[in-house]
Image (cartoon, rainbow, N blue to C red; front, side, top):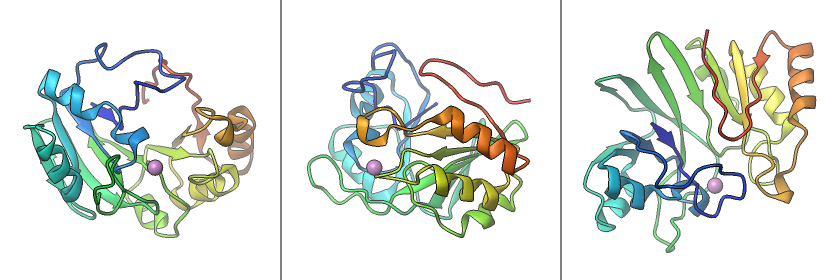
Length: 207
Ligand code: NI
């Protein structure tokens, strides 16, 4: 599964859209650096694309045929696990200016693990509700400028109290440059959450 496959034109991506063969692609919102290569990859692989209903309609108009629309607060049981869409505070306009509905984050329930991918969002207090689910891994933006920065990322960790956090959405461009190692030190000093840092192309195995 891929979430927001921004590979073409991504200065940090170690692979291109032809290097991966996903079964599923999740699209959190309409911005070009998140829809990314979804249309091309879905057409090539036949992957099922999970998104909100408005992006679903836009992808259908682009000729993508395997689509599963959901919407915020709604979950669905796929053969391998459950996906629920959460709120996110952001925009969702599509690359051609089409209406992309409301942006979302994703809650994945897979093999007795709960993974919260916040996607692009500012801090919101309802992250506390998401934390009540008992999150194993919270994937949180810390880039600032377009999303939460390091300070609000730390507050998000406090609200969610996940076992592990993985910072994302930083260093792709100068305007979102951050010191992730410093964030890890601070989060681990001030909370009970462990922080995993990944370079592009690296993997994380959950305990
Ligand atoms: Ni965005």
